[in-house]
Figure (tube, rainbow, N blue to C red):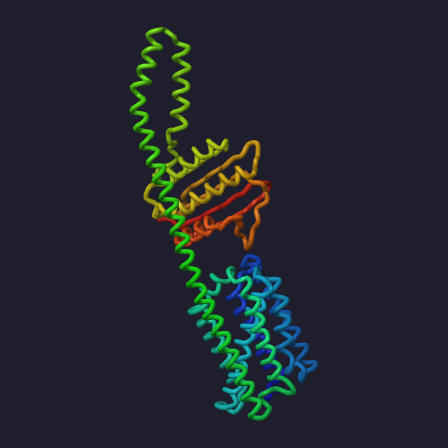
Length: 430
């Protein structure tokens, strides 16, 4: 074995590689299961790999030294695909990236120990330990945020990125272990292996930079879409204000005529006609007069507007709202979040074609948290991807909700059960 490693040291190094691999993958991944369950499964996987590798190194130490790395990473591909929300293409790229990172660390660690410490194996282990944490820090500092943000928008691109990186890893591993470990071969072979590693390193850096660039372009595009959406809401709000002003003017203008009609009925003693007229007038005023739902003017305006819209569409809408005026959430963000949720609810009810469509809204504040729940009738055919409902249109509304909620460290949860669609929103309020 390289550096004359003993069985016990091989087991220690292998455990380090397994743990590092799992930590690196989780830093790039969106797990399929809750974190508690995910960590438990990963711990069990690490334990099983450690036991298996220990048996292998005790039984066939030569083949262990030659094939353990490639065997382990092949096993990792199957395991993480089961644990991840991502497509197989993205999982393959993630694995190929972390494989290269670890192979690079193994190669540098061995050379470091041989050149500066006369082949001391503990120098190699210590180097790998610090190398790993430097890599994790660099990834979190410069790439992770962009990487996770862009992941869902690169479905097709992951295929060629995975193909290139996997091919590079296979070539690098083949040149490193065939016909024997590169560290015990001549200088020419080591230079060739080093050259392949440098080219592969440059390829991965280029890919990561491309991801960062695409993230910037995507954010600029979303900014434009968000601005257009906000402008549309402002125009809608302005139209509502103008409608209210016109209604007030019309009411003042019509008041004199109403008084004259009432006086005429009273003079003639036509009490039944008078009562019928007053009932019609009361029904009209009830339809046109905004309902007071809560103390927050913006929330009340949004709820009033959509309550009228729902009533006109024959939708039953119930509201329980307790929101104070000064809650620390901007009006435009309230409009984007609650307005979109109610707009989608109305469309969902209309599309469902149910005999008794309904919308149920609950908004409350507790412990500096604002919780909103909107339930509505639906046709049950809602398609989800990574927990997000997919729209036949552009889906800008949901994106706008998520973007505005993120400003307040918010959480959104979408569900569809028994032909009822539910969105739950929790925001940090002041």
